[in-house]
Every structure is written in C-alpha cells, then in structure tokens.
Length: 95
Image 1 (tube, rainbow, N blue to C red):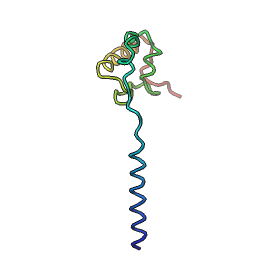
Image 2 (image 1 turned 120 degrees about the vertical axis):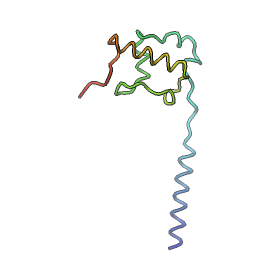
Image 3 (image 1 turned 135 degrees about the vertical axis):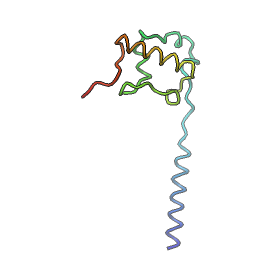
Image 4 (image 1 turned 180 degrees about the vertical axis):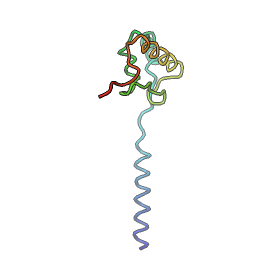
C-alpha cells in the first residue's frame, strides 16, 4: 500500500512540473512596437478590428490580446463605433 501512495504523489508532482514548464513567450503590444499600425486604428478598418474579437463577437481582453491599456481603450471605442455603423456584428450569427 505504501508503494502505491508514493507513486501517486510522484505522478501528481510530475503533472505539476509539466504544467509549470509550459510557459510561452510574453505577449507584446502590436501597436507600441509599430507606431504606424497604431495610426490605423479606426472604426472604418474592420479587418484590423476583427482580429480583436472572438468568434462570438466579444471584444478580447488585454490580457489575452497583449495590447496596452491605452490601445485597448482606443480599440474598444472604435469597435463599438464600428458596430453602430454596422461594419462589425454585435454578436455571432445564429446557426
């Protein structure tokens, strides 16, 4: 019985180590690295704004997209304006 207990604990620790080693590279803000791209944030640029929406039409949070707070606020404002102008959907189409 004691041998099985030790094996289970070892397996748990092994799983934790695997999870910890799965770190990816830190996300960089696209707009701070390329100032010309930051100037193109506009409600008419639907292709750029679509990259910051989920499949369901929700705005991606900054912790997932990697954008800085300044550009996240600007993106949110322009996405909402684009939705009002009917260039972007408010939600995903029903299937």
